Image 1 (cartoon, rainbow, N blue to C red):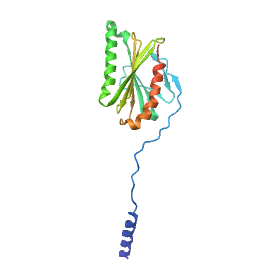
Image 2 (image 1 turned 60 degrees about the vertical axis):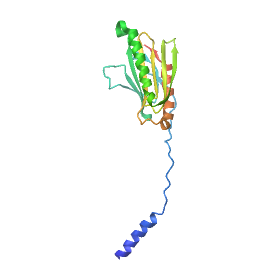
Image 3 (image 1 turned 180 degrees about the vertical axis):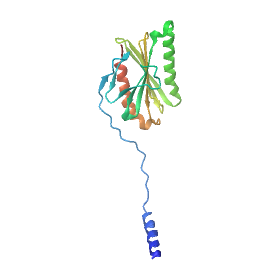
Image 4 (image 1 turned 90 degrees about the horizontal axis):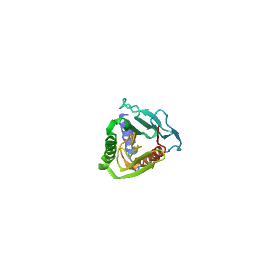
Length: 195
């Protein structure tokens, strides 16, 4: 009886192993994005702009002493736009020097990604009606922050933003998300104004 049971089990294993395995080709998840619709942010900030309805504002907990520093969270895409704000009018007599330092720091932060970047494109933004001037940096390649920007009126306000995606940088799989969120960054820039 044991011999029959043993032969049956061996036969079962032998017959079940005849199927050949074919690996599946590499693929990426299909992403469905929501329709674009925007709302103005709360008027308690010294700056105003519109953000997508599918985003939410959270305080920057890493800098609790800076109340105007916020994160615009995109939970569905595991992404955020980190916003930092400086009131350069209160920097005293060295306000122009402080502005120059902030501009240089912003440029350095963008070009810090040049090690991993294939290219860094700069796009100038000018809105004299609202006194908003800035540069958008598009960082192509496997960068942790593929879109960065700054906005200023050159006398009082300076706002810097950086898009971060909380995933391993892989431009092939993240490109649709970056392209989708880049439009939101551009809308934010185009609707920016100072209080």
